[in-house]
Amino acid sequence: MLNRIRKAVAQTGKGSSDFDLNPDIQLPANRKLRPAGVLVPLIQSGNELRLIMTKRSSALKHHPGQIAFPGGKVDPDDADEVAAALREAHEEIGLPPTQVELIGQMPPHETVTGFSVTPVIGFIPQPFDIVAEIGEVEEVFTVPFKHVSNLANYARQGRMWQGRMRLYETVPYGPYYIWGATARMLRALAERLPQ
Image 1: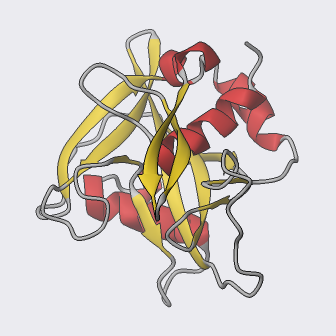
Image 2 (image 1 turned 135 degrees about the vertical axis):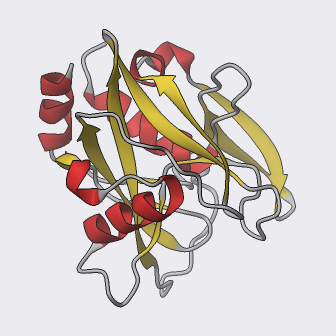
């Protein structure tokens, strides 16, 4: 499976966006996107490849309770989006950067909140002590990669946003409602894999 993921990530192509499903929304031509990086951490569990994800704290001002990858904006001390993703994964789930085998990067995803998010795909070859960042991460859990790599598990739903219906991607798993930018980035990866 990792070889299939490496081949998928190595493909060229354009990035995704929160606006892909809503082409009628006019984006400002002079908008400035802030760079960010998220880690898409894959870990072997028995004979199954799983994806490590987080549930954000319900007390957070931005995206409370949402399912997300560990990651965040590029800080001045970060060399690039990869460094930001690795730093944030260390802070949010206790994953040492030295334990991540980088597979590659997907094209950036533009969010409705003004970020250009680079998904960094990494393999975690050994177990590590998961430590959720208090105040930011409510829960750390895993999802079978076969679930998020199967396009049949995705659905489009809609919500009212700024007075109009906005469509978004979903890929629910058990009690976890994975949606929005996170689901859109996962779908972009799944679309590159043979089905």
